[in-house]
Image: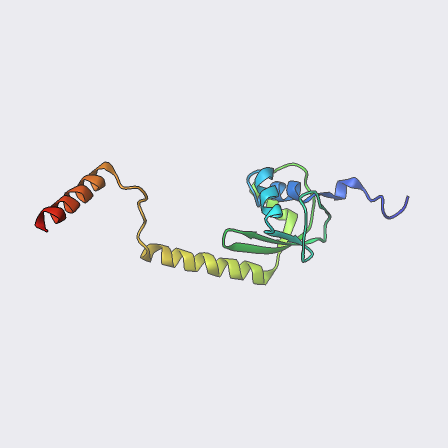
Length: 138
C-alpha cells in the first residue's frame, strides 16, 4: 500500500468534524461558516469537503470569538461536549484571548441597558399621548 491511501478512519470532512466537535449546532451552519471564510485550515481558506486529519491546524471565527486549535482525533459521530473537547487542543494564547473577551463582554453587559426591541402596546400608547400632547401645544 502506498502512503496516499491512508486509513480512511483517520480522515473526515471538515464540516462533519466541526459538527462532531460541537463548534456548530448543525452541519449546515458549519458549511455556511466555512463558505463565508470563517474557518481556515493550516492558514488557508478551504471548502466544506476538505479532508482533515489529526495534526491539522484550524482557525475558527464565530461571532466575535475565535479559536486556534489543532485536531487531535477524529470522531464521525456527535458525542457529548466532554468527549468532543478531547478531539482538539486549543492554543494557550487563543484560550486566554477568548476568556478576556468574554470577561469584558460580561462586565459591559451589566452597564448597557437591555434594548426591548419593539414597543409594547403600553409603550405605543405612551408615545401616542406624548406626540399628541406635543402637537396641541404648538
